[in-house]
Image (cartoon, rainbow, N blue to C red; front, side):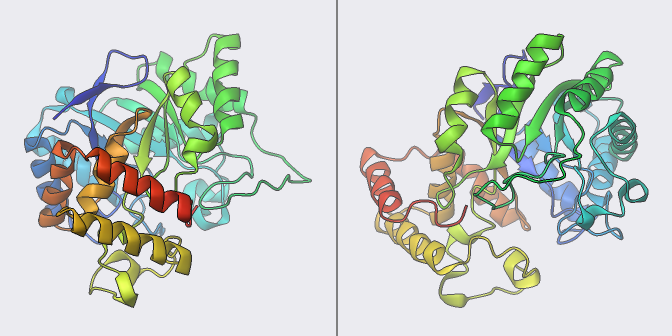
Length: 346
């Protein structure tokens, strides 16, 4: 497993990261442990989770993902060999059950969220603690256009960074990162960190895949120049790029079959583009999912690609993508499809 540097830190992470948001919803604790065992045996040292997981987020299941990882860490040991990342949730009515409904990215909420995550994960520290989405209203979770809010009462970014810095100072967090952030948000955080002597974000976790390359437009240059690499989530577009949902097929137990809310990558334009990518992969004798993952893995601004799976067979196939090197011909054909149907599912 090839290792890459986490930002400008001495930490080296595997080029693939195990995403865990199915643990506690689509996967039982035993299945979660089996996935973790397989991933670590394959050389993955990087595990990503969040306080709101599993997804879709519900009060009844909130925290089960971290709990499953925590029982696995307790049973297997080897915490010092892992790079463990979690996230603190931003505000929103859809997570109004968190901390009595007053969830914001301020000192009190960050401290409470972190302590709860550490307890569930059965560890004293996190290697990477990320802001799951901004406190302010902006264009994330599939929204392209920015619409300014007339009544912006969001927690200032400086206050959030200072709260995270306090957790770094006491040793509960080694490094911090952002997620679902914009170019303005990332650059502002980097500037504030420099001005006030605070920890810099070392990663940004945003969606990135063949159907959504919006990261390239404003964030790729920042990621490279500022050593704040992308942790690419949804590299298969909720599984769409595997081809298993083509022509309206909905396999039993699959995410899009179970949860209608995950339809971002299922519009007609995305389906046409997906068909072109799947056809391209099969014409070259490639597994469509592995091709899509290998393409993300090859981007110079990507630190690690976050994999999610519900079965061990899926996970094993996805893990094999790191060894796949796409030919110049395949890469050129991917670009041609993109030019004809750019970013059909932002």
